[in-house]
Length: 135
Image 1 (cartoon, rainbow, N blue to C red):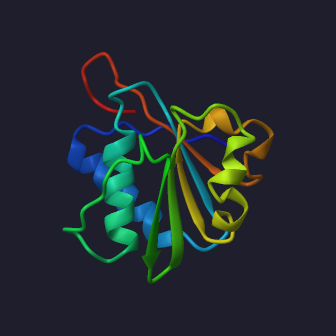
Image 2: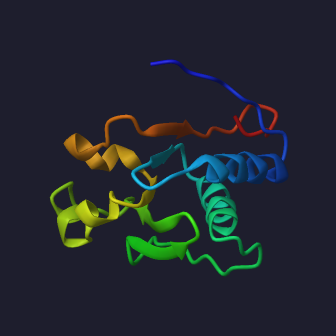
């Protein structure tokens, strides 16, 4: 798998990357966001969803407790999953995983997907550099 490392010097840079990826996203795409707490997964997700839904002021609640939030966008349906509290991959079926994959899926904590990890997904790993920048 080819990898590209990018240093993001600010929250604005993280949001810009998310907007660029959103502009290229299409139904059937999966964007998987990995990284430790505080690395910028939620910042990335909010910017991605606001761009994809063409609403820069849209309220984007974290799906930490609901596990999934669904959005209608000009690109098609988008499902934003936060799998931090997921009991295991089998629980995804109850959340509508199969149907969600027909649209765009944005997944925080994708290591919880196990064998359900979509082939061809875009893996975005966010980390905090020693100087505080995001990578």
